[in-house]
Every structure is written in structure tokens, then in C-alpha cells.
Image (cartoon, rainbow over all chains, first blue to last red; front, side, top):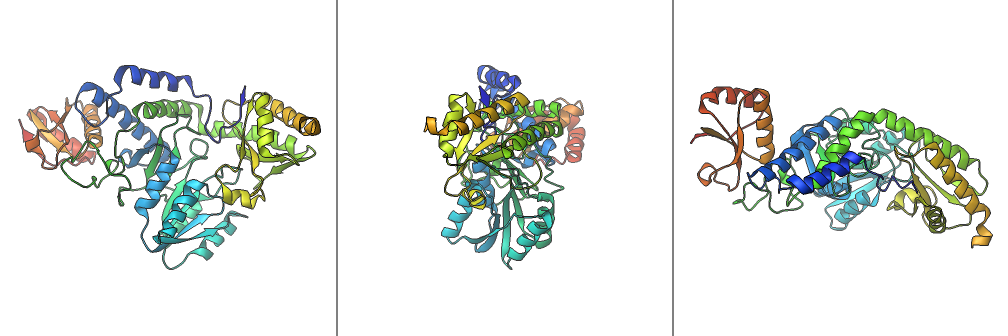
Length: 381
Length: 71
């Protein structure tokens, strides 16, 4: 089987992740931060060590690392807790529904208004588009770092500088970039970086993270038990507990700890170079193949590429690839804005997500399969 | 023994790590109700003869404690 749906979730996971999750469930999975017995403390210690590792990875403080269940939860919490009511918000034209929907909902509830800036063109053109959309009451900018359907990457360091200049809260969706691109919360002036454990960090599903740029706490989004201040009716007003109501997913978090150590030993720069090399190979083959439309959003490489075989639906192509033991994703990838940009707003596309375990042979086999499906379309339809 | 009361398990773990690195024995405990007015809370228990060292290490590591109790 060839797995090329790494933009949805990376697979397989490193063996160390599987082993530690299993060890946790067998040996020490107490409820972290709820008791003082050895199992509870051991779980809490492992979680704290993971906070430290994440803080080191993304240049923040351990206390500013908040665990959630996935990036969508992270984004919802960051957006809804830091949003200043009756103000204006900016998002980009390639946002995933995990950004678009919470912002849209807030606007429907009259909590804010929002505008969409263009990500087309050079960094300077993107910054110009942002500046031209800033209003007197713009208080928040939420954008993805890297698109989930192509290689487009936003200049988040420059956007962070712009947000600092205009005193705008800057929230970054790092769903596709965490573990692939270097991100410094401090140097990039990011107020909240929202990332998944299960994509480029190669951890398990069930853990997402918000890494705050400072220890300012907004309003709570979820309320419940935190293991502290139990006699108070309100949530604690300090990080990370302010945003961590209920029991954390200890097995997923310790799995993430192991994957972070594993990824660090590989060096993310080398991982990115490997994936971009495979991307270039894939792009060059598909681009020169008849009856195939490849959607290139920028000139640089990435690790995610979308395409269509002319005249065939993306669902059909993905199903045919699955018959050949190749896993890819079809449809709209929860990104209606970006698909609109690619003129695939009605048809969707087939997405190939490259991961660290893929090889050149995987790419050649995929390309042969795509050519075969394209060639035999009449017979198969 | 003495106990420094801390606002959360996260801060207690930070304190424990800092004290471990300074070779000061300590243990994370749940606070007795008389030590906290807000309900469940954590603290670190250590030998009272180390109280000044503990205070210094916590200060150096920017760990804020609420109070130190003598048991």
C-alpha cells in the first residue's frame, strides 16, 4: 500500500510513538493533575515534559502550551477567547473551514465583522492586500501558514510584524506547516499558534496544541474541572489550565512527546527537503502528462499537490487509485475558499499529500497509476 | 517539613524540576484544605532547613508561590 494522504493525517507513525502510547496505557495512565498518587503524577510529569518540548520546538514557554483535541478545537479556542467583540477580523482567501466557520459564526452572531485578504502574488503584494483591508477597528488576523491543498505558503513573519505595527492579535493555523517549516512564536510575533499532533509532527490523532505568545488569558470557551481552584465557580485565569477543562488525552500527548523527539533527531529541514524533492518529481511528471490539470499555486515546491484528470471526477480517480492500493483524498478538503481560487469550487480535486516515509518509487507508481486511469477512462466508465 | 503552595500542577512540576536541578529534594503534594481557600491545589514539600535555597531557586526560575507552610 502506498499512503499519500499525509496532509489529512500522517501514516504510518514512528514505532516509538506506538510503544510509548501502549506503555502509558499499560503502566501509568492516571488522570493528570487530579491526584497526588504516583500514576497521576507520572502522567502529569509526561505532559509537562511534552509542554517543554513543544515550547522548545516553537520558541515559547512551557506554561503557554495548551493541549486541545485537534487544530480545529485549538483555533476555536484561540479565536473565541481572544476576539474583541464588535471589532473587525481579517482572514486569508485560502483558509480551511476550521478558520472560516468560527469567524463566520461570530459574524452571524454580530460579535465581529470580517474581510478576506488576497494571498495571490509576492509577499509584498500579500502584505499590501492585508494593509488595504485593515480598518480602524481591526483587532484580529487569522491565517494559515501553508495551504492544505497546495504549496502556497504565507509570509507569517512579515504578517506578524504588520500585526504588531497595527496592534492586531495574530493567530496562525499551522495545521500543514508544523514539523515541516520552522516556526518561532516569539520571533514571528504570533499570539496563538494552533497545530495538530497528528500531521507533520507524526504524533497520534486526539491531540492538538495552542502555543500562546504570552501569558495573557482571554475569556474561557469551555468550562469544567481543572483539578485546581475547585471551589471557585469560574475557570482559573492562568495558562495552561484556563483553557484545559476536563481530562487531557494522556496517551496521545505522550505519543506526541515521542514523535517530537523522533522528528528532532531527523531534522525538520531534511524532512522538508526530502518532501519537496518528491513534490518536484511528481509535479514535473504530472505537468507534462496530457489530459491532466495540475494546480500550482506558487513557483516554489511544497509537500501537497492537487490535480484532476480532465473529464473525470476527483472521487472516481481517488477510488480508482484506492483499487491500486494508493491512498489519496478527493473532494474539497474542507477548503471552499482555496478551491474557488483554483477554479475547482464545483468539481473539487484529487490531493496528494507527501510524507517523510514516501519514496521516489511511490511517486513513480502513483504517476503510472494516474496515467493508466486517464488512458483507460472510457473502458472504466 | 515545609510546603510551598503553588497555583497549579503545571507550576508544581516546573518547581520540582528547578529544585531537582539544584539538588534539593522535594515532593509534589495536594494541599490540605487549610492551605488553600479556593479548593484543590498543589504544593511542593521539602525540608525546612532548605527554605532559603528553595525560595531562591523558585525566584530564579520565575516560579511564584503563594505561601510557605510549616507542617
